[in-house]
Image (cartoon, rainbow over all chains, first blue to last red; front, side, top):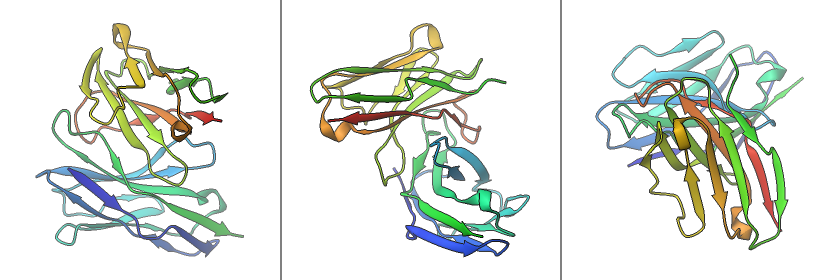
Length: 116
Length: 115
């Protein structure tokens, strides 16, 4: 079983600043992936970044990076140089590796607002 | 490359009526998911298909929800009879295989309001 917890329902930050979204998880899988998805008002979930649990190096995608602390079961998302287009709901999710366990379990989301 | 297509985008029905949602995944994607997202919550998996077989339907309320994926391509999710608590966005998603870590692509969702 997998659970994902996002403890920040809402956050806001000034444009061009850096913001960090928190996520903790629990899983019975020995190996797994962690994801951050962005959901704009259109409701389409868009993959922002993914991390494979056995890789120690934190994933980076342009302005987006993660801080993966496996022992603490923590997976935070850092957005640098925030832009107005980053305004959206952000969901943390986990998924297993093996067939049938790869489905995603999502947290409750953080609503991020970038202030001009 | 075309994305995951869903229809209808919006539907309003009265309780006890029925509704069906259609999903066309990305071409060649063997795995198809239906998620339910209630307002203020994260998406919750209803059912997962691999080709035309069901992999996981443990969270599908089978007394009122049904889903099929004939010929392993398009899928239909049906609710009959609908309840007020079924008001949600129904997200269809697909991935190329069932291997963990593959990108799962989502459609824009079908918004259901039950009154």
